[in-house]
Length: 102
View 1: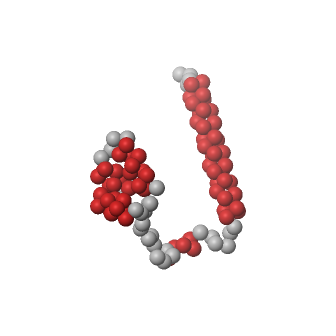
View 2: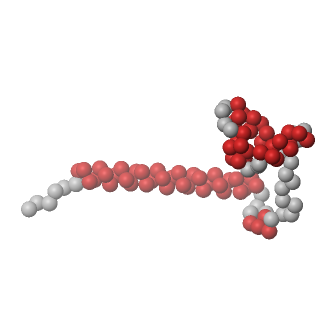
View 3: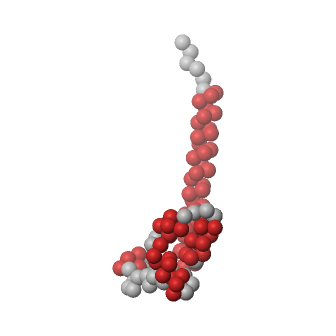
């Protein structure tokens, strides 16, 4: 995947050094991976689970978690719609408001 991205960037005119910087490897690493015939990223990644892995409620099924996220999105959408309606109502009021007699 990473080697493919670099090849694509170089084909599109990017410098190989800059493409390597963007994906976070050195040009030397790129050369080594190509020489060794590594098809892709050979980094091992983390060896232990992070301590905050249980930050997500592990007792809640993913389907319910997804439903909660969707519900939050709907609520956010409703709030945005209400805000736009109120803003529109207030701007109409400002245009049509009565002028003080005096």
